[in-house]
Length: 85
Ligand SMILES: [Zn+2]
Image (cartoon, rainbow, N blue to C red; front, side):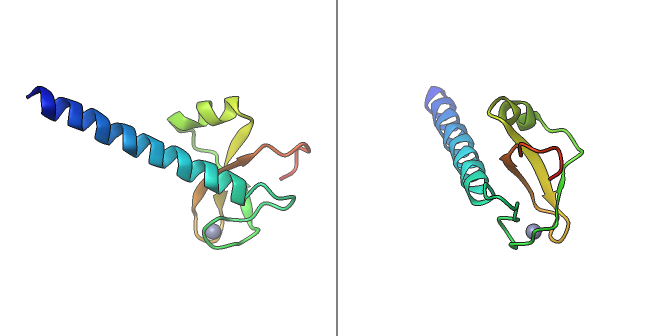
Protein backbone atom coordinates (compact mmCIF):
# COMPACT_ATOMS: atom_id res chain seq x y z
CA UNK A 1 0.00 0.00 0.00
CA UNK A 2 2.72 2.44 0.98
CA UNK A 3 4.86 1.49 -2.04
CA UNK A 4 1.99 2.28 -4.41
CA UNK A 5 1.57 5.69 -2.74
CA UNK A 6 5.27 6.51 -3.16
CA UNK A 7 5.23 5.27 -6.77
CA UNK A 8 2.27 7.55 -7.46
CA UNK A 9 4.08 10.52 -5.95
CA UNK A 10 7.18 9.81 -8.05
CA UNK A 11 5.03 9.54 -11.19
CA UNK A 12 3.33 12.84 -10.38
CA UNK A 13 6.72 14.46 -9.81
CA UNK A 14 7.98 13.28 -13.20
CA UNK A 15 4.82 14.56 -14.88
CA UNK A 16 5.17 18.00 -13.26
CA UNK A 17 8.87 18.13 -14.20
CA UNK A 18 8.03 17.19 -17.80
CA UNK A 19 5.32 19.87 -18.01
CA UNK A 20 7.69 22.48 -16.56
CA UNK A 21 10.58 21.63 -18.93
CA UNK A 22 8.17 21.62 -21.90
CA UNK A 23 6.89 25.07 -20.93
CA UNK A 24 10.46 26.34 -20.55
CA UNK A 25 11.40 25.07 -24.01
CA UNK A 26 8.32 26.80 -25.44
CA UNK A 27 9.35 30.03 -23.71
CA UNK A 28 12.85 29.78 -25.17
CA UNK A 29 11.46 29.02 -28.64
CA UNK A 30 9.04 31.95 -28.55
CA UNK A 31 11.39 34.41 -26.84
CA UNK A 32 12.47 36.16 -30.00
CA UNK A 33 11.71 39.73 -31.00
CA UNK A 34 8.63 38.67 -32.96
CA UNK A 35 6.52 36.08 -31.14
CA UNK A 36 6.05 32.84 -33.05
CA UNK A 37 3.99 29.78 -32.24
CA UNK A 38 6.22 26.89 -31.05
CA UNK A 39 3.94 24.38 -32.77
CA UNK A 40 3.19 25.82 -36.22
CA UNK A 41 5.57 28.79 -36.48
CA UNK A 42 2.82 31.31 -37.09
CA UNK A 43 3.29 34.93 -35.99
CA UNK A 44 -0.47 35.38 -35.46
CA UNK A 45 -0.30 35.35 -31.65
CA UNK A 46 -2.83 36.83 -29.22
CA UNK A 47 -2.69 37.06 -25.43
CA UNK A 48 -4.74 34.28 -23.84
CA UNK A 49 -7.76 35.62 -21.97
CA UNK A 50 -8.64 32.49 -20.00
CA UNK A 51 -6.85 32.25 -16.67
CA UNK A 52 -5.33 28.95 -15.55
CA UNK A 53 -3.54 27.94 -12.38
CA UNK A 54 0.04 27.95 -13.82
CA UNK A 55 -0.47 31.53 -15.09
CA UNK A 56 0.23 32.90 -11.61
CA UNK A 57 3.53 30.99 -11.40
CA UNK A 58 4.69 32.09 -14.85
CA UNK A 59 3.62 35.69 -14.18
CA UNK A 60 6.05 35.72 -11.24
CA UNK A 61 8.86 34.90 -13.71
CA UNK A 62 7.70 37.64 -16.12
CA UNK A 63 5.92 35.42 -18.64
CA UNK A 64 2.44 35.74 -20.11
CA UNK A 65 0.11 33.17 -21.65
CA UNK A 66 -0.47 33.45 -25.39
CA UNK A 67 -2.64 31.58 -27.85
CA UNK A 68 -1.91 30.95 -31.51
CA UNK A 69 -4.74 32.08 -33.80
CA UNK A 70 -3.93 29.42 -36.38
CA UNK A 71 -3.59 26.19 -34.37
CA UNK A 72 -5.00 27.54 -31.03
CA UNK A 73 -1.96 26.21 -29.16
CA UNK A 74 -1.52 27.81 -25.74
CA UNK A 75 2.00 28.62 -24.55
CA UNK A 76 3.97 31.05 -22.42
CA UNK A 77 6.39 33.68 -23.60
CA UNK A 78 8.40 36.43 -21.88
CA UNK A 79 6.40 39.58 -21.35
CA UNK A 80 7.25 42.12 -24.07
CA UNK A 81 8.57 45.48 -22.90
CA UNK A 82 6.04 47.34 -25.06
CA UNK A 83 2.28 46.94 -24.42
CA UNK A 84 1.58 45.78 -27.98
CA UNK A 85 2.40 42.14 -28.67
ZN1 LIG B 1 0.25 27.77 -33.97
